[in-house]
Image (cartoon, rainbow, N blue to C red; front, side, top):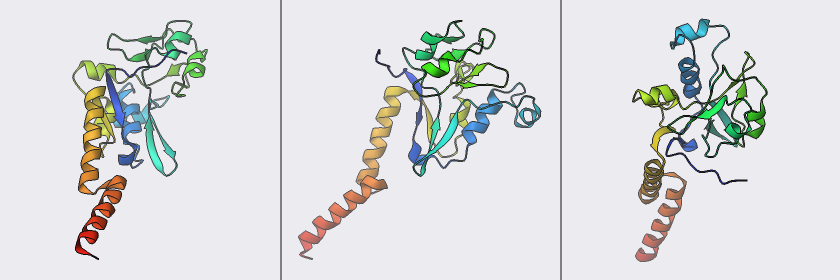
Length: 193
């Protein structure tokens, strides 16, 4: 199996900030509705479905969405070309070409694509139309805690490393507890306590 690489732009998920409010799911469903409004989406039949899902795992919440793999197993498995990459590198599905065979569901290592009530496969499209308009994906914009962030992979990962290092230095978070205890132990040793 060929190695999968991270796309240049991505949605970074920080499960430590997710409170499980599901605002991302709601925003995603509204964004993929015909009306593009909350009140309109509620009345639509069939109701719009989110392409992201918040999964509880071992006491934390993890917003899961398509990883837009490169190479993408779902694209390689799709017999009709419904699953394809955009010029930006996002994996999207064309419902007009989808025959509902579900081979993409079997091929996805993350279990992401899902089957809709219209017998078509739906998946996260990274809100490519919003991105082309200069807006972040709907799920990122709706997240009230900053658990979802959008940007270049290297910048987001560097930012996350700096944030965790700062938390450690300031004594915040899990690592900070260790740092605080070590610092207190050193202080007690200096003072002879």
